[in-house]
Image 1 (cartoon, rainbow, N blue to C red):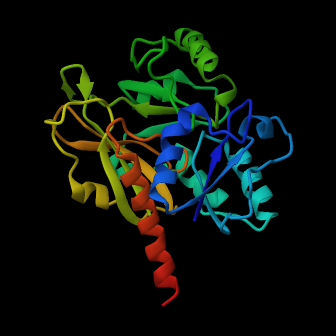
Image 2: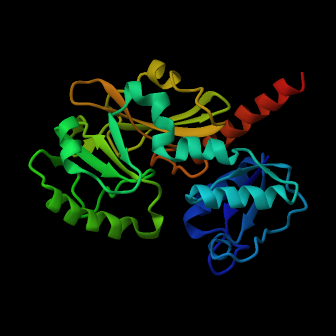
Image 3: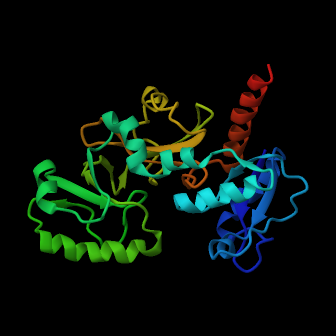
Length: 289
Protein backbone atom coordinates (compact mmCIF):
# COMPACT_ATOMS: atom_id res chain seq x y z
CA UNK A 1 0.00 0.00 0.00
CA UNK A 2 0.93 3.62 -0.47
CA UNK A 3 -0.13 6.48 1.79
CA UNK A 4 -0.54 9.92 0.21
CA UNK A 5 -0.02 12.96 2.46
CA UNK A 6 -0.36 16.71 1.83
CA UNK A 7 2.97 18.40 1.32
CA UNK A 8 3.91 21.77 2.76
CA UNK A 9 2.34 24.92 1.34
CA UNK A 10 5.75 26.31 0.40
CA UNK A 11 7.27 23.07 -0.91
CA UNK A 12 5.03 20.10 -1.58
CA UNK A 13 8.05 17.78 -1.53
CA UNK A 14 8.30 18.37 2.23
CA UNK A 15 5.67 16.98 4.60
CA UNK A 16 3.28 19.49 6.16
CA UNK A 17 4.57 20.32 9.66
CA UNK A 18 1.32 19.26 11.35
CA UNK A 19 1.52 15.80 9.78
CA UNK A 20 5.22 15.26 10.41
CA UNK A 21 4.74 12.85 13.34
CA UNK A 22 2.42 10.60 11.35
CA UNK A 23 4.64 10.70 8.28
CA UNK A 24 7.70 9.71 10.30
CA UNK A 25 5.76 6.89 12.00
CA UNK A 26 4.76 5.52 8.61
CA UNK A 27 8.39 5.64 7.47
CA UNK A 28 9.55 3.86 10.62
CA UNK A 29 7.15 0.95 10.15
CA UNK A 30 8.77 0.23 6.76
CA UNK A 31 5.43 -1.21 5.65
CA UNK A 32 4.19 1.47 3.23
CA UNK A 33 5.31 3.51 0.29
CA UNK A 34 4.66 7.23 0.78
CA UNK A 35 3.96 10.08 -1.59
CA UNK A 36 3.31 13.79 -1.05
CA UNK A 37 1.17 16.08 -3.20
CA UNK A 38 0.67 19.81 -3.62
CA UNK A 39 -2.48 19.97 -1.50
CA UNK A 40 -2.87 23.74 -1.10
CA UNK A 41 -2.02 24.69 -4.67
CA UNK A 42 -4.04 21.79 -6.08
CA UNK A 43 -7.08 23.08 -4.16
CA UNK A 44 -6.57 26.35 -6.02
CA UNK A 45 -7.03 24.38 -9.27
CA UNK A 46 -3.37 24.02 -10.10
CA UNK A 47 -2.15 20.78 -11.65
CA UNK A 48 -1.88 17.82 -9.29
CA UNK A 49 1.79 17.20 -8.56
CA UNK A 50 3.20 14.17 -6.77
CA UNK A 51 6.62 13.43 -5.42
CA UNK A 52 8.45 10.54 -7.09
CA UNK A 53 5.64 8.20 -8.14
CA UNK A 54 7.85 5.37 -9.40
CA UNK A 55 7.37 3.30 -6.24
CA UNK A 56 3.68 4.00 -5.71
CA UNK A 57 1.51 0.91 -5.47
CA UNK A 58 -1.81 0.97 -7.35
CA UNK A 59 -3.75 1.05 -4.05
CA UNK A 60 -3.51 4.31 -2.10
CA UNK A 61 -4.78 5.50 1.27
CA UNK A 62 -5.26 9.26 1.68
CA UNK A 63 -4.23 10.59 5.08
CA UNK A 64 -4.55 14.31 5.55
CA UNK A 65 -6.85 17.29 5.85
CA UNK A 66 -10.58 17.17 5.29
CA UNK A 67 -11.77 17.52 1.72
CA UNK A 68 -15.27 18.46 0.65
CA UNK A 69 -16.95 15.60 -1.24
CA UNK A 70 -16.44 17.29 -4.61
CA UNK A 71 -12.75 17.83 -3.81
CA UNK A 72 -12.31 14.21 -2.81
CA UNK A 73 -14.04 13.15 -6.04
CA UNK A 74 -11.61 15.29 -7.99
CA UNK A 75 -8.57 13.77 -6.22
CA UNK A 76 -9.93 10.27 -6.79
CA UNK A 77 -10.52 10.95 -10.49
CA UNK A 78 -7.12 12.54 -11.11
CA UNK A 79 -5.28 9.71 -9.37
CA UNK A 80 -7.32 7.11 -11.24
CA UNK A 81 -6.30 8.74 -14.52
CA UNK A 82 -2.72 7.92 -13.52
CA UNK A 83 -3.59 4.30 -12.78
CA UNK A 84 -3.74 4.88 -9.01
CA UNK A 85 -6.75 3.96 -6.89
CA UNK A 86 -7.74 5.47 -3.57
CA UNK A 87 -8.78 2.74 -1.16
CA UNK A 88 -11.90 4.70 -0.18
CA UNK A 89 -14.00 5.61 -3.21
CA UNK A 90 -15.99 8.89 -3.29
CA UNK A 91 -19.27 7.22 -2.33
CA UNK A 92 -17.72 5.57 0.73
CA UNK A 93 -16.08 8.88 1.65
CA UNK A 94 -19.44 10.66 1.54
CA UNK A 95 -21.08 7.85 3.53
CA UNK A 96 -18.94 8.61 6.55
CA UNK A 97 -17.78 12.20 6.09
CA UNK A 98 -21.29 13.67 5.87
CA UNK A 99 -23.17 12.95 9.08
CA UNK A 100 -26.65 12.99 7.49
CA UNK A 101 -25.48 10.15 5.22
CA UNK A 102 -24.31 7.87 8.03
CA UNK A 103 -27.19 8.81 10.32
CA UNK A 104 -29.65 6.16 9.01
CA UNK A 105 -27.20 3.39 9.96
CA UNK A 106 -26.52 4.67 13.49
CA UNK A 107 -29.71 6.50 14.47
CA UNK A 108 -30.60 3.83 17.03
CA UNK A 109 -27.59 4.87 19.11
CA UNK A 110 -27.10 8.56 18.44
CA UNK A 111 -28.87 11.84 19.11
CA UNK A 112 -32.01 12.55 17.11
CA UNK A 113 -31.43 14.97 14.26
CA UNK A 114 -33.16 17.27 11.77
CA UNK A 115 -31.48 18.56 8.60
CA UNK A 116 -32.23 21.86 6.86
CA UNK A 117 -30.49 21.46 3.52
CA UNK A 118 -31.01 25.08 2.47
CA UNK A 119 -29.73 26.39 5.79
CA UNK A 120 -33.03 28.09 6.64
CA UNK A 121 -33.80 26.73 10.10
CA UNK A 122 -37.39 27.16 11.30
CA UNK A 123 -36.81 27.47 15.01
CA UNK A 124 -40.47 26.88 15.89
CA UNK A 125 -40.39 23.48 14.18
CA UNK A 126 -37.14 22.64 15.94
CA UNK A 127 -38.59 23.51 19.36
CA UNK A 128 -41.49 21.14 18.71
CA UNK A 129 -38.98 18.28 18.60
CA UNK A 130 -36.16 19.22 20.99
CA UNK A 131 -36.04 20.80 24.45
CA UNK A 132 -32.32 21.46 23.97
CA UNK A 133 -30.38 21.22 20.73
CA UNK A 134 -27.02 21.94 19.14
CA UNK A 135 -26.03 23.08 15.63
CA UNK A 136 -23.47 21.79 13.12
CA UNK A 137 -23.13 21.59 9.36
CA UNK A 138 -22.95 18.16 7.71
CA UNK A 139 -19.37 17.67 8.96
CA UNK A 140 -18.49 19.79 12.00
CA UNK A 141 -19.83 22.05 14.71
CA UNK A 142 -18.30 25.30 15.93
CA UNK A 143 -17.18 23.65 19.18
CA UNK A 144 -14.75 25.66 21.29
CA UNK A 145 -15.76 29.02 19.83
CA UNK A 146 -18.04 31.90 20.87
CA UNK A 147 -20.97 30.08 19.25
CA UNK A 148 -23.35 28.64 21.90
CA UNK A 149 -22.82 25.00 22.85
CA UNK A 150 -26.58 24.45 22.78
CA UNK A 151 -29.93 26.26 22.60
CA UNK A 152 -33.15 25.71 24.51
CA UNK A 153 -36.84 26.59 24.33
CA UNK A 154 -36.19 30.24 25.21
CA UNK A 155 -34.52 31.04 21.84
CA UNK A 156 -36.50 33.09 19.33
CA UNK A 157 -36.13 32.98 15.56
CA UNK A 158 -34.52 36.42 15.48
CA UNK A 159 -32.06 35.51 18.24
CA UNK A 160 -31.19 32.23 16.56
CA UNK A 161 -30.63 33.87 13.17
CA UNK A 162 -28.34 36.40 14.80
CA UNK A 163 -26.31 33.66 16.52
CA UNK A 164 -26.00 31.76 13.24
CA UNK A 165 -23.97 34.66 11.84
CA UNK A 166 -21.30 33.61 14.35
CA UNK A 167 -21.54 30.00 13.19
CA UNK A 168 -21.08 30.94 9.54
CA UNK A 169 -18.16 33.20 10.37
CA UNK A 170 -16.32 30.31 12.05
CA UNK A 171 -17.07 27.68 9.43
CA UNK A 172 -16.42 30.05 6.51
CA UNK A 173 -15.22 28.27 3.37
CA UNK A 174 -15.20 24.99 5.29
CA UNK A 175 -19.01 24.99 5.52
CA UNK A 176 -20.21 21.67 4.10
CA UNK A 177 -23.77 20.55 3.34
CA UNK A 178 -26.90 21.66 5.12
CA UNK A 179 -27.46 22.70 8.72
CA UNK A 180 -27.97 19.82 11.15
CA UNK A 181 -29.94 20.32 14.34
CA UNK A 182 -29.12 17.61 16.87
CA UNK A 183 -30.70 16.76 20.19
CA UNK A 184 -28.31 17.97 22.89
CA UNK A 185 -26.84 15.12 24.93
CA UNK A 186 -25.68 15.63 28.51
CA UNK A 187 -22.29 13.96 28.76
CA UNK A 188 -20.77 12.61 31.95
CA UNK A 189 -17.90 14.71 33.32
CA UNK A 190 -14.81 13.62 35.19
CA UNK A 191 -13.55 16.91 36.53
CA UNK A 192 -13.42 19.18 33.47
CA UNK A 193 -13.22 16.32 30.98
CA UNK A 194 -15.91 14.31 29.25
CA UNK A 195 -15.41 10.60 28.53
CA UNK A 196 -15.11 10.25 24.77
CA UNK A 197 -13.52 7.51 22.66
CA UNK A 198 -12.54 7.47 19.00
CA UNK A 199 -12.65 4.11 17.26
CA UNK A 200 -10.97 3.49 13.90
CA UNK A 201 -12.36 0.70 11.72
CA UNK A 202 -10.53 -0.84 8.77
CA UNK A 203 -11.70 -3.70 6.57
CA UNK A 204 -14.64 -4.41 8.89
CA UNK A 205 -12.54 -4.60 12.06
CA UNK A 206 -11.67 -2.37 15.01
CA UNK A 207 -8.03 -1.37 14.68
CA UNK A 208 -7.88 1.35 17.34
CA UNK A 209 -10.00 2.30 20.37
CA UNK A 210 -8.63 5.29 22.32
CA UNK A 211 -9.68 7.96 24.80
CA UNK A 212 -10.21 11.16 22.86
CA UNK A 213 -11.01 14.03 25.25
CA UNK A 214 -7.96 14.26 27.53
CA UNK A 215 -9.90 12.38 30.20
CA UNK A 216 -8.03 10.48 32.95
CA UNK A 217 -7.29 6.80 32.45
CA UNK A 218 -9.63 5.76 35.26
CA UNK A 219 -12.78 6.76 33.35
CA UNK A 220 -15.19 4.01 32.34
CA UNK A 221 -14.10 2.11 29.26
CA UNK A 222 -16.16 2.08 26.07
CA UNK A 223 -17.97 -1.29 25.95
CA UNK A 224 -16.30 -3.35 23.24
CA UNK A 225 -19.62 -4.95 22.30
CA UNK A 226 -21.01 -1.51 21.48
CA UNK A 227 -18.01 -0.63 19.33
CA UNK A 228 -18.24 -3.95 17.46
CA UNK A 229 -21.88 -3.28 16.63
CA UNK A 230 -20.76 -0.71 14.05
CA UNK A 231 -17.76 -2.42 12.46
CA UNK A 232 -19.48 -3.12 9.14
CA UNK A 233 -20.63 0.25 7.88
CA UNK A 234 -20.34 1.00 4.12
CA UNK A 235 -16.72 2.18 3.98
CA UNK A 236 -13.38 0.38 4.18
CA UNK A 237 -11.85 2.92 6.60
CA UNK A 238 -13.78 5.15 9.00
CA UNK A 239 -14.14 6.42 12.55
CA UNK A 240 -16.92 6.62 15.11
CA UNK A 241 -16.78 8.76 18.23
CA UNK A 242 -18.57 7.53 21.34
CA UNK A 243 -19.33 9.34 24.59
CA UNK A 244 -20.56 8.35 28.03
CA UNK A 245 -23.76 10.11 29.16
CA UNK A 246 -24.58 11.33 32.67
CA UNK A 247 -26.61 8.17 33.34
CA UNK A 248 -23.68 5.90 32.42
CA UNK A 249 -25.05 4.85 29.03
CA UNK A 250 -23.15 5.42 25.76
CA UNK A 251 -24.05 7.21 22.54
CA UNK A 252 -22.42 7.85 19.18
CA UNK A 253 -21.63 11.56 18.89
CA UNK A 254 -19.73 11.73 15.58
CA UNK A 255 -18.59 9.66 12.61
CA UNK A 256 -16.00 10.34 9.94
CA UNK A 257 -13.83 9.09 7.12
CA UNK A 258 -10.73 7.36 8.46
CA UNK A 259 -8.39 9.20 6.14
CA UNK A 260 -9.30 12.65 7.44
CA UNK A 261 -10.02 11.88 11.12
CA UNK A 262 -7.39 13.05 13.58
CA UNK A 263 -5.60 10.69 15.93
CA UNK A 264 -6.56 10.76 19.64
CA UNK A 265 -4.02 12.42 21.98
CA UNK A 266 -2.91 9.11 23.50
CA UNK A 267 -2.65 7.23 20.20
CA UNK A 268 0.44 5.09 19.57
CA UNK A 269 1.02 6.33 16.02
CA UNK A 270 3.31 3.52 14.84
CA UNK A 271 0.93 0.89 16.23
CA UNK A 272 -1.93 2.62 14.45
CA UNK A 273 -0.26 2.32 11.05
CA UNK A 274 0.82 -1.27 11.66
CA UNK A 275 -2.83 -2.06 12.42
CA UNK A 276 -3.91 -0.46 9.13
CA UNK A 277 -1.37 -2.58 7.26
CA UNK A 278 -2.46 -5.79 8.99
CA UNK A 279 -6.15 -5.11 8.31
CA UNK A 280 -5.76 -4.53 4.58
CA UNK A 281 -3.06 -7.11 3.96
CA UNK A 282 -5.41 -9.67 5.49
CA UNK A 283 -8.02 -8.56 2.97
CA UNK A 284 -5.50 -9.03 0.17
CA UNK A 285 -4.54 -12.49 1.40
CA UNK A 286 -8.21 -13.50 1.58
CA UNK A 287 -8.87 -12.26 -1.98
CA UNK A 288 -5.89 -14.30 -3.27
CA UNK A 289 -7.15 -17.58 -1.81
